[in-house]
Every structure is written in C-alpha cells, then in structure tokens.
Image (cartoon, rainbow, N blue to C red; front, top):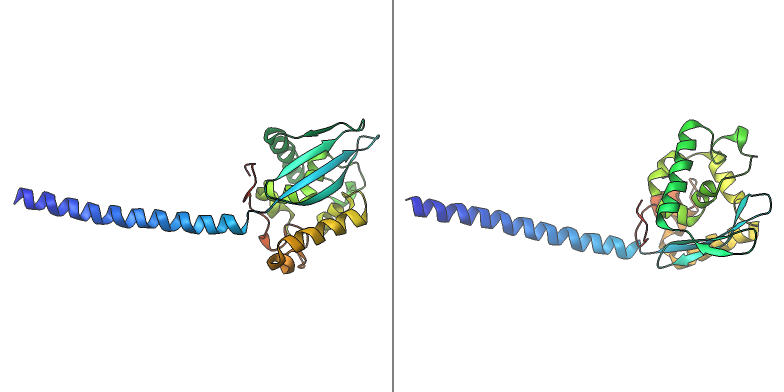
Length: 196
C-alpha cells in the first residue's frame, strides 16, 4: 500500500506540475503577445538652451526607447538608464511635493527641469509609466507637456508619427486624458531597454 500511495502522490504532483507548466507557458505566450503589441518605443532628442532650459527637439517612434541630450555647445550624448531613472525619480518627488512645473499652475512659468521635459515626452510616458497615475487628469500637465516641445510643429509631428506607427491607439492618444498617457496604451515599458 505504501508504494501505491507514493505512486498516486507522484501522479497528483505530476498533474499539478503539468498544470503549472501549462499555466506558465500560457502566461509566457500572453506576455509575448502583449510585448508585441507594446513593442513601440520612442527616440527623443532634447536640446539644452543657453539659459539652461530644455526643449524636445525631435521625437519619433523607435523599436527601443532612447533619450539623446544635445547640450548648449551642440554636443550630443545618449542618457544612460540610471541617469533617466534618477531624473524621473526627482521629478516624481517634486510632483508629490507640489513643486513640479508640470503639475503646479503657480510655478508652471518657471524653467522646467530635464526630468520634467523627459516626462513630457513619449519616452517619459514609456520609461516613467509608474508616474503616470500622478499625471492622469491633471490639466496643467496636459498644457505644460506641449510647451516642452521646441515648437507646436514639433509636437504635432510627434503625435502624428506615433498615431501613424500605432493606428489602433489613435483614439486613446487623442482621448480627453490626452497625450501619451492617454488610455494607458503607451504606459508600459514594453520594448524599452529601461526599467520602469
């Protein structure tokens, strides 16, 4: 009887194991399809002005999310994952404290930090998706993020290029919540090389 019991125990364990394996495989295939849908990243070039302020110079869809900073001397360099995460964390703290130009109308005329400009970009929405909930429905953010672009044409080009790259998300990116946080369609780190 001992042997029969052991065999039945293994059979039960084996059955559970099989279910677990199929569950894991199912999760992986679902995860893969989600990653395929959200593979879109963003390539952003941010320019530093003489007064130390920053503007989004160019932005377009890319398979991997990258942020390039062009300093006031015209020297370009790619920001590292650690640099971006530190900048976004600092901006997140400012949002919590009510001192961010993105969300506080009283100081929105101040010079935006590099972190706030990154957060205004599509890259910021992807990399800093964890901050998105603090910005949903904030009308000041919606106005401020547009002023983070070099010109209204730069902003329009960006929105158009992302809508063309992902036409199924057109409604969500132009919904009342607006911007790249709209509808949550781009609020995943997806194909980004950065953690979020």
